[in-house]
Image (cartoon, rainbow, N blue to C red):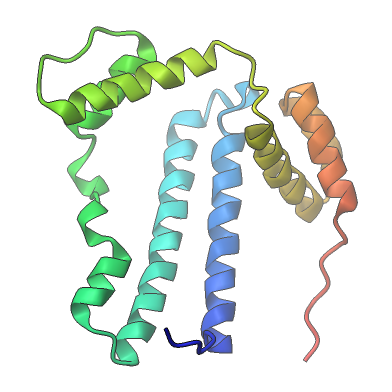
Length: 187
């Protein structure tokens, strides 16, 4: 396998897009908090789709580079995992509605094949996990990192206590405290 590094301008562009996507993901989490009840419907969808679109931009930018350098189209499609692509324009699918039914404890959908059954079971599993305290260390750490980073960048670390559970707020404060204030890059 070839060991050519990613060109620096492409690397920087990809990093910028990933940072933007992560920022949007943090906002998705922020709008799920109880104090944001007035805006959660609109803003969670806006920011989740912004994050997805931004990551799509990163993927397609990398794909354009690989195409430019002569990668075979079938290899490129394989790397892009195009068979997994789902269009939001079509709206929620039967599998999405089955997952929601499982989450909300609604009856299982009429038999519609293994994908609906699996989606319903996935929803049930997530619902059961929601009944236990959010103490999964990986989830808590991820939330704390995202919230702590955003609070540090916005200069509003004290606001963490107003909308996060105490355990996550404490961890987010530690994350924010460990971060240096970003400085502009020097040429």
